[in-house]
Image (tube, rainbow, N blue to C red; front, side, top):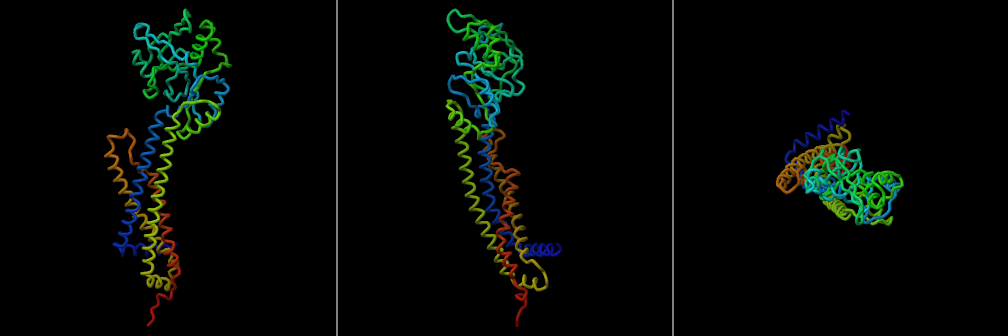
Length: 398
């Protein structure tokens, strides 16, 4: 250990004795690493920013069937158990998926809305929105604005049976909450599964409302469709393909997500190619500098070997790490400054909280680790050369 500390002190003093050359190597390393850090930050900012903005809109992760088809409860339950699926909700038939909402004291503000079955955990709603009471509904923001109602207000739900002279049921409901603006741009009422089932049965079968309510509670109910949400963006194309392979025609944003994933892969490839070129140049230049330093100081190193200093190979290894740490520190400072300038210039055209250039702690640690590893690789040849210097090379001959 004492011998290693001695080699470290000698390497450090040698660097200090040639400040100009050491500074040139440090600046050269920083000039190589800083642009790579900025490119990595731009890639992270662009791709991660797009991912974040898409993840904030759960409709990007939504997949639904395109047309009416029979899906039993067991099949939907199995679909919801897939590891990539976080939420599944059935849908009623298109003709049964609408109703008239009427404010009791303002019938002129009546509005026809889509009834969308929902339950706890719906990504379109906040966790506390969907009530357990079947008479509670959650209105979309456009529907609430058109009806001039807010959470806690009462409405009359008019359900008319299909056909001329058909019966109509008026059901009092309560607005439990108003869905976030991002949930949907349509006039929609999120309703309990039992209520949606009852509306469908009442419209299609000649039953009274109580009988329709009782029939809707049967576990053998068959649904006309579904909507599901996957866990990650990467799951959208795969789940879309799996459902289509099963013969189910679906509607999703798989094309948009695939485009983003392709952009991510191509930018990653571009960054890796650029990084490889930069790292190769850094390793070559540092290796040449360290080798030249060993050759210039061969007599001094041989003298150290002659007086009993072991492991001269550690001399260029330690110097390489000193230069690498100095270079990457300078590069990180420069890249962080450039990143702040870039984010400031694009602050007006980017969404809040989504910078264009992200140089975070993870990137700094990764860059530092790669630089240290590259410095070790660059110093290997010089260390091997220093280790082969014989002691008698330090003995001058007359």
